[in-house]
Amino acid sequence: MVVTVLEELSEGEGPFIKVGDKVVIHSTASVRSSGVVFDDSREGGVAYTVAVGVNKAIQGIDSALQLMRKGSRRRVLITADEAYGEAGLRPHVPPHADVVYDVEVLALNESLVAQGIRVRREEEARVQRFLRMQDEERAAEAAQGKGPQKGGSESSSDESSSSSESSEARRKRRKKEKKRKREKEKKAREKHKSKKHKKEKKEKKAE
Image (cartoon, rainbow, N blue to C red; front, side, top):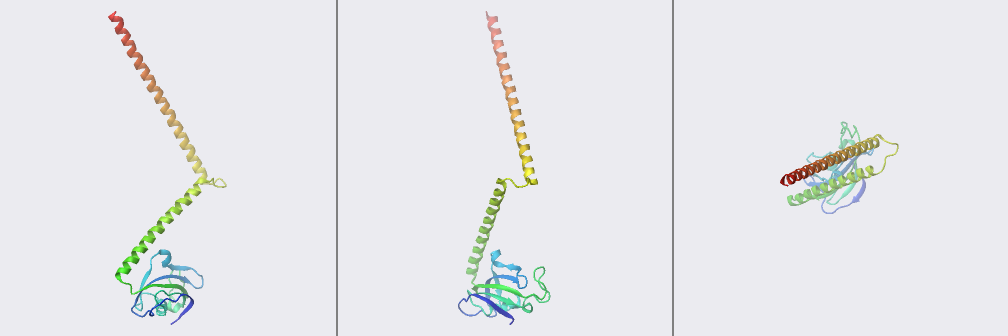
């Protein structure tokens, strides 16, 4: 068993995990030599379900889990032999690389009801996180749009040009509206004048 406990973050309680158990875990994995994180269930907000001892996870994770209990959290060093070996995991894990896992056991042999509740909560958390990110992006865009950019950037120039074109279009539209209004008033006056003239003509004939 080539697994070294680097840090005990939480001991947990209950029986040790054994082969055949189904465990729900959060894990953050990084390359020991570079510190590059190549997998993080916490960031994604979705826990992993691992069946211990059935070759669904790397051997080092199986070995590490059998030293843990429900609620336990550890940082463990897994050598290349029990990680990704000479093949590595392209593009993130090079060949013969040792890896570090921050593993937390959330549940042991979870019932279907508990699994359904957990999955629903994870989905709700993902939605909330997505909405927060959208709000932050909109706030950042609004903040960038308020102040003038230094150095007279191309985008600032484009915005200024667009603003000028918009102002020119509004000015032309107002001019056309005024012209139409004057023409309408002129026609109304001429129509009124024509009616008045016809009325006076009728009155003269009647006399």
